[in-house]
Length: 168
Image (tube, rainbow, N blue to C red; front, side, top):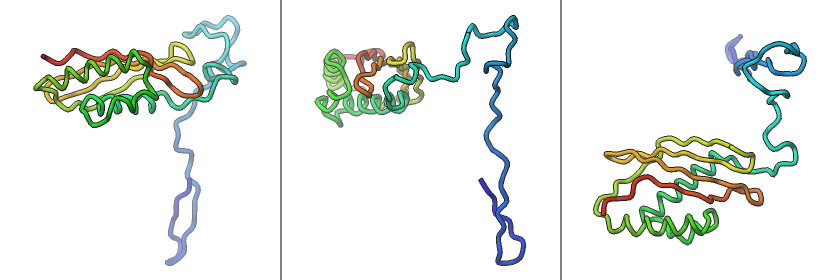
């Protein structure tokens, strides 16, 4: 990164800026710890290798995928997207649950517009992502949970737990 400074009217000089990112602590790299030195981590190798190793399939970012899937579900429940468009990303069990919930929401007189407030992703296994979602409406908050599994270089939603059902 550089910054421009004026030296003489009409001319600019480019001065490099110092690095703007925070320093990286390399405490767990090999050669930094003595064999008998106690550590907070029970790792025998430094955690600089991504989970799954070099042969793991290249997957899209689980956070971005989960956000897109939550948006698809919200659009489907609001009636703005047909449930058939979700079949590419959701298993049959999840689609069945969504169709039941969509029918309940249609019969319900009160279903406020939900907005994604926060989303967290955990990876219990390199090919699995467990997602917790916090949604907010006018007068309430909801929690959802999704389970994403890796299949052929993409994420597939195999489990969906939605918050409380709408009042009938």
